[in-house]
Image (cartoon, rainbow, N blue to C red; front, side, top):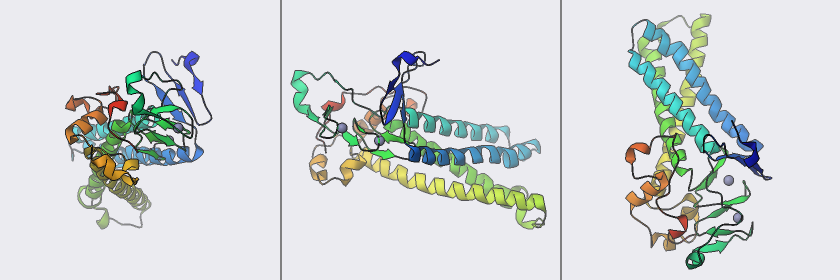
Length: 285
Ligand SMILES: [Zn+2]
Ligand SMILES: [Zn+2]
């Protein structure tokens, strides 16, 4: 149940905190973002319904594949959806209107000239969301949310699980076409074969697009994280200043994931605990 007494609304977004879940949810009001995330969800839904119905379950019933393959596909699909939902609804690190700033740390903070609020260095103002985000990486329309200090780890998980699910889908599409029941050898004028071939081609196309896009995005993200730079910082003219004070890649990765327990890094259903306050980080853009 949602505790509506904690509901807060602005022009750009809505936030509410379900008291029972203790998860801080964050929704960006942006029709273009809704369209983009609907397309991503549609691709997930298409392959999560089509692959089990036409490939996995029939061949499992006929004894062509073990049950473990079916279970693994459903687990990959569930993790992918969980990462998508959490990355798109998690608070990326929005600054409070009246933050408590210890006197000794005031020089680590600055005033945003767009929303006139104090923020730690390395924060950035998102013009799409209309507020500042701590250690903002970029605004991603495909999850309709900013990627910042508090949800960057979820965005990485989404990249990983989307790669796993789309690669799994491509392998099954390939097996269905060439190995399980060679569609190339069937009568392609028959309605059922034509129908299945069309579904298979759409699945393969979406799998290739998602796998290719997410692989390049994941590579870009990891090189940024391991060099302790956000996408915004990499594109900025102050990159040489940032590079001069970077931390070790192990620390930078653990800080993004929010825990030193590496087994938890891939678990989407947990909350992130920062290793240190964001304003202790070195220089900013
Ligand atoms: Zn701002
Ligand atoms: Zn944003």
